[in-house]
Amino acid sequence: EADEDMARAIEMLERASSVTVLCHVQPDADTIGSGLALGSVLERRGATVQVAFAAPASLPESMDELPGRHLLVGADEVSESVDLVVTVDAGSRGRLGSLGDRLDTASASLVIDHHRSNTRFGTLNVVHASAESTTAVIARLFDRWGVEIDADLAHLLFAGLVTDTGSFRWVRPGSHLLAERLLATGIDGAHIARKLLDTHPFDWLPMLGSVLGSASLLPDAADGRGLVYAVIRSEDSAGLRSEEIESVIDIVRTTSEAEVAAVLKQQDFGSVWVVSLRSKTEVDVSAVACALGGGGHRNAAGYTATGDLPDVIDALREALSAS
Ligand code: 5GP
Ligand code: MN
Ligand code: MN
Image (cartoon, rainbow, N blue to C red; front, side, top):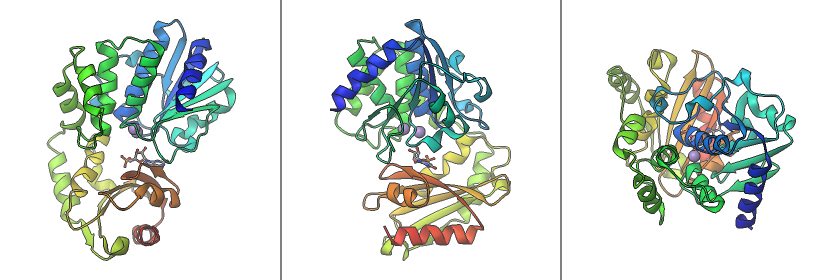
């Protein structure tokens, strides 16, 4: 039936003459790559297309070479009513932020995603939980649709694939075949990966020194499997890009003594904390994040908490021991 949904999705996309493609808040290269790739194809077919994500974030600087950025419009410029709203890489309506209400004013909505926690909030939902990235789902859609993947589309699809697989660490049969197809169009995969994942200003280093230097290891947490966590306070992240902040979890999660890793990111010197969770194998952090109001994948998830830091950490420990 997944195949049938794909066919129905293509029908919906072919019928629509005005389409808004919505990416998730705090956009990453998978949601933007998916949104711009789909938007570009719809634009070439003659549709009126807007691609957007909710404020306050602007497009991360690491994505400023992605093709098709002319399709991006500010959240306040998004049309009130279009034939079709498509969401890409958003596991729930909440992930669209203030743009979630555009789902109600459009004639129809199509959800394209790969999160196992996806709440199926569209008129039609194409959710491939086994896909490495939403761009991998978009690639399947293009193949089925007969869309030729040129270098610009390949650049966008590769951007999501390389980031969501952690530079081809979390791969499955077929991941490298898709990468090979995309690279064969002539794109510079090494440059794209470096630009997206391996470029930080010098000030990243002292931030890491401070944040990692005060990380905590709780061996008893998560039923004895261990939790390691680091806290990024607003004063640590001042002047740094989202890229520098989002990179921290990838260092913290390598701790061998802990099955679960967390990074708690303070918002605007206040009591709101955006939390990233990662697990190695056993713990389903998607379920933990769902219990705390968020969502994600089995081994990578997140949520937003409000409160004093010790209480937020206690709530996390509690949710982990119940998991
Ligand atoms: P990250 O820690 O990189 O921000 O997020 C890890 C994964 O969890 C991503 O796939 C992301 O989509 C998902 N995720 C992060 N925060 C939230 C949230 O608040 N709600 C939901 N539903 N998913 C989230
Ligand atoms: Mn994403
Ligand atoms: Mn994704």
